[in-house]
Length: 337
Image 1 (tube, rainbow, N blue to C red):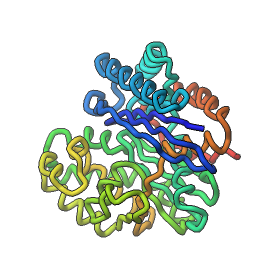
Image 2: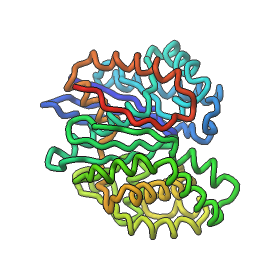
Image 3: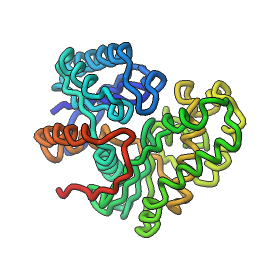
Image 4: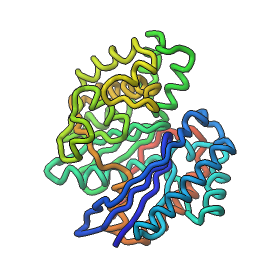
C-alpha cells in the first residue's frame, strides 16, 4: 500500500509519499512548494484571494505528484494559518472544488495527538512516559503520555510567527523589553500546562517541528544531511546562549547562522524564546529533536487503524469551525483506542 499526506503549513505545502510496510511508513518521495502564507496572513486575519489561488495550485500539483508515484488521493490538512482564518471554510471549499482534494483543518489538540503518535513510534517504548513540545507558526502543542496516544494534550496560541508579529514587528532586532514581554506572555499562558508536565515527571522529552530542528542545528546538532538516525539533542542552557546570539542580530543576519533558513529567520528569535521558556517551566533540561511528527502520525493512524479513521477528521473539522480564533487553551483527554 502506498499512501500520501499533504501538509499546508505557515511557510510551505509539503507532500510525503510512503510505502506502508510492516507497520512503518517508508518514504519514497517528498516535495514542497513555498507559499509563505504567514507573510500574507496576519494572525487571526483572512487568507487573501491571491494566497488562496497559490495554495490551490500547490495542492493540485501535490495531488498530481502523488498520483504519479502511485499513491491514492492524499490525506490533506492545513495547520493554524488556515484553521484560525475567518474565511477558513471558503479556503477549504475552494481547494476541494477546484482540485477534488478534501483539504481539512484539525483542532490543535488533534494535531498534538497525531504528532505524539509519530514521536512515540520513533522513540519506541523504551522512552517511557513521554513529553512532547511542538512549535508551529500559529500554535504551540504540548502533550504527555505513557502509551500510544497522549494522556493529555494542550494547544496554545504561542506560535513563532504569531508572536513575532505581535511583539517584534516594529523593531529588527527587537528591544530587550519586547523580548521580556514575549517571555512573560509565554510563561503566563503555559503555566498550568507546565505544572502538569512537572507533576507527571516524564522520563523522556521530545521536540518536533522545523523550529526545533533549526534551533538544534544552531546549538550544534548534526545537519540534516547526516540523515534521520543521528541522535540530535537540544539543551536548555545552550538554547539560552542562542537567544542572546539571536537577539542582537537583525533577521537578515540571523539567516547566516547555522541551521537558520532565510524564510524562518524573522521568527527564529521568538521560536527560541518560546522553546526555552517552555523547557524552563516544564523542568525539561534536554529534548531529543525527533524527525517524525504530524505527517508520520497521520500515516501511522492510517496504517494501524485503517482508512476509515480519516473520515473522523470531517467531524473534527466541523467541531473546529465553531472555535473562534485564536485557539484557546484547552487540555483534552486523548481519545481511547
